[in-house]
Amino acid sequence: MRKSLAWMMGAGSFLGLASSTLANGWNMPVGVTDVSREIYSLHMTIFWICVVIGIVVFGVMFYSLFRYRRSRGAKSANFHENTSVEVVWTAIPLLILVGMALPATATLKRMYDPSEAELDVMVTGQQWRWHYEYLGEDVSFTSSLSTPRSQVNGEEEKDENYLLDVDEPLVLPVGRKVRFLMTSDDVIHSWWVPDLAVKQDSIPGFVNENWVRIEEPGIYRGQCAELCGKDHAFMPIVVRAVEADEFDTWLAERQEAAAAEASGVDREWGMDELMERGEQVYGSICATCHQPDGSGAEPTFPALAGNEALLNDLDRHIDVVLNGVSGTPMAAYRGNLNPVELAAVITYERNAWGNESGDAVQPSEIQALLE
Amino acid sequence: MWEVIKSVLAAFFGVQNERQRHRDFQHGKPVAFVAAGIALAVVLVVVVAAVAIVAAR
Ligand SMILES: [Cu+2]
Image: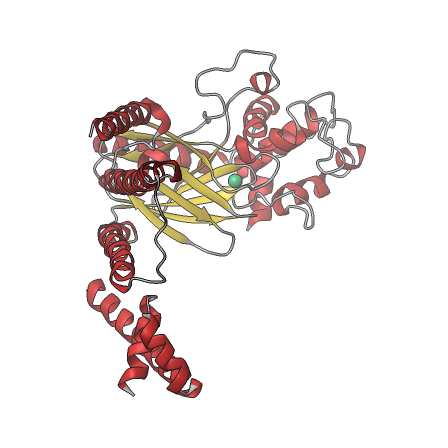
């Protein structure tokens, strides 16, 4: 009796240790949506069921090993079968499994119901960044890693959100049902934000659906969860959830900016403003492969600095950026960047890092090629 | 016939007693067990599908 008391105390202190460890960030997050909380409570319920089963099974086993040992004169029983015991130990796990499957299936059904969404966001994975398009709102942008290379290379101290920061977070409204349409331009990625309980593969040629209704404003971070190549660890996700009216204001501002950019196509752009815009686009889109200084990474990612073949052939340069190069990692950017961004980045590549072509590509020229 | 079905159901559940097993091996025909196994597998699929359809409503 005293022994079993000691056993129970041991088990009790183990449970206490387990719960405090779980509270210390080892566990999955509770999250900020209804579904994420449901998933968390399912996870904890099933976890504790497993703990209880483990304690009972191993408890009986170790107790029997100890209590009925040979040195105390125990004799092993010698029988072949016992149908009733076998039926019981088959039926009990069956009932436990069904008992766990029922609530889990109910949650799954909710998770797979993206109907009646108030906002549709197309999420496109690209090597190695995310592209977001607010469908029907004329707002779209690319979200790239903003952690500086110096931190990656260890030349500078790594900050708190090392590799979890982007230049432009995905902004979503609190309290509205948002449907995600996930796809990819190249290989399989996976859009994963633990606090939102969303982890959905983005697959080229497929559109997967998922949804959230975020309940608390805040910044929620995630990562690509499907090994997708060299910079798989360098394409984080940042979601900025804001109150619905703040979101509406933000969306209206973005729509205005997009409209202004569209009207910018018609005017003549100066070299300086093209270079300034181009540097920004280059840093966000091109620098991961072709490097911030244009030195590339031969043989896969050609150097742009001092690339005579490119500098002598403007048409080829434009073609490569707009349409990509098949059979290489160079993607087509005609659908991802607008004419101003395309013209600016091509101009930048032809006039930065000692390249001195002097070419200023006008957005209107690109616009003509896109039509 | 009923004995064959009982044995196949016991196999589905995963527990069979020794007496029944001896009888099956002495008197049963393998073809009967195979046929009953296939038929009951179809029944199982239909039952699971029906439950799933009802639950999905
Ligand atoms: Cu990826």
